[in-house]
Image 1: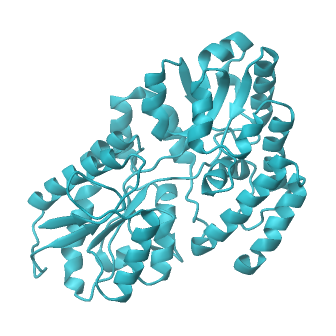
Image 2: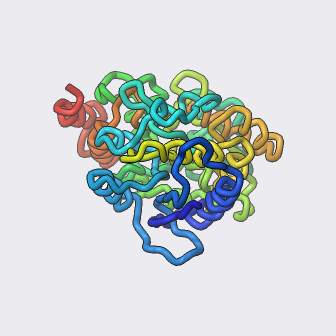
Length: 397
């Protein structure tokens, strides 16, 4: 028997719950305990609401609850958590690694799995991933004489923005707010320059920040980006006067309903190719248990949940991209419009990858502070990132 308990997040909560509950029911009826594994109730905690009576927790509250439960040796059997939280719980000794539970990671794309890797050990498996790309308004680009297939670098994108401005429309909108959303949206440009999060003030990092501040200065992006969330910048795109919007897979339903004649391209790297964008999405993890025999059943449940068909059903419901090539192939066969998103996810990387782990939140906060300083004009991109790197020194060294 599986019980599912504790959690709340507003965005896409109902659909995620529906998808996961459906898979849980199938896994609970198809999986047998076998061997000497304990029978009975296996608990599942997640940060999302569902259509049953429950007590709600947001993502931070669930993380704190998981930490406390681990310290008290009263953890759930299975825990679904946002991927940047994996390293925090793993570093606290709350989670098992896959070598302990025999949970297979075979077939999972390494870049998606990377958010769960800490010091060479893998803690859990992803249920799927979302990421960022560029939505574009076909009508505006046609009017401006821009062929979106020619946008393969920063230079070609900036040239397109200049043409859009020349016809009286706005070139691009993005989120530059001083929260994780700002860092999340800056990362494709930062990584697309070849920069590394351990060296924010590198020449590559400065080039990335100069790109975005230059767009605002030249009127290709609105001044509002400094306070725009991903939601408010998206609303600007839906108004129909902006050519490009940096946003995620979660906006697909909205753009289809809007009536905008839209297309999607990957965010370009500085010189060519798709830039690495950060992965969003959740990991199924197995917390440490006093009775290690319970891992046998927990592994069966998690393996069932991430099986190819369950992955396709869940990820299609969420507008996620599945974590394996086999499931991605099925998704693409059923919906050819997912092609650009599969390309974007294949190029993406976890925010805590490169073994940053619990260092990432501090680096990110200093990054979004630099973004704010540069966009507002209170500091040059070079000075803003130098200050951020100085603030990072204690955690990086």
